[in-house]
Length: 313
Image 1: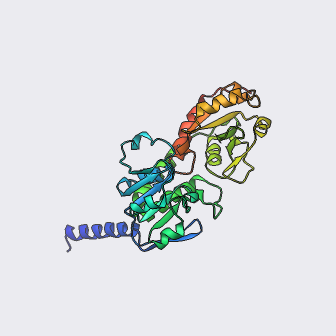
Image 2: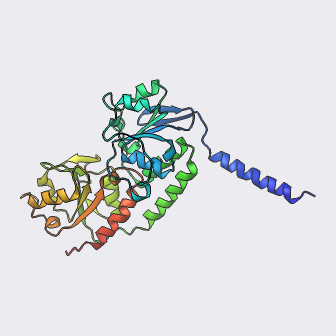
Image 3: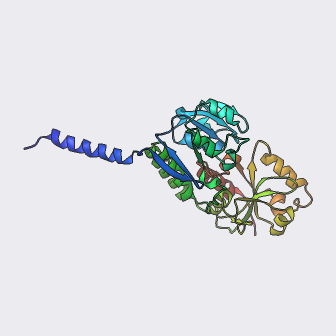
């Protein structure tokens, strides 16, 4: 008769087998923005460009693997304010500066970060043995499909695979799915415009990227939903003609929400908009306005703002 030690051994062997199944097999080959990328092992020295990339790594517990950051779009959320991030540049760091960190991966929030006058072209990086990754929602060489929260979660899962941290990725996805499921979309049938930047002409959220995804989750009808793009340059006349019930203001260091309110109130074309007269604004920080780990939190925060708005039909 076998003893309890044999049973324990079988259980531990099964646990080890399950853990092994969750581990990434290297070399890992993926397709990213139409480009083949190969990684010999889990990246240990990562340069992250833009807040969306930086915060994704922090959310996955990968702070110790970050050897440089650049082009941060805003302040880090409170849970990461003590993160020790080597800042290469407040703007887009040069290729020379990036290479000095001896990275094995450069992770860009936008495909345009990888330019000859930026961090360097992707093909050159690969020739030097440095892998590259672009947030799939920010691809331009290959048009990304309409963004959904499932696609955001897919990026989290893919990064979990790349870094061999699938357990952390799964936990993050589960947490964000639960937060999203708890949100009650607004049922008042309100329309909205997503005002990202611009003065003479507004740069607004269109129908296929993070602004559209977030407004849909909030129960808002995007006045630019028929425009198949992430963001577009519109006209104030088009905004006035649509007369949105709510205006979403992106709060950026270079164009704050307060500056936008002032412009809307002083511009003769927009000053009489119902949303401007009645101060029906929702505010979202710039880093949460692009595809990434802060989108779900943005919906939670904006849903509370929206519920507090007074609107009489």
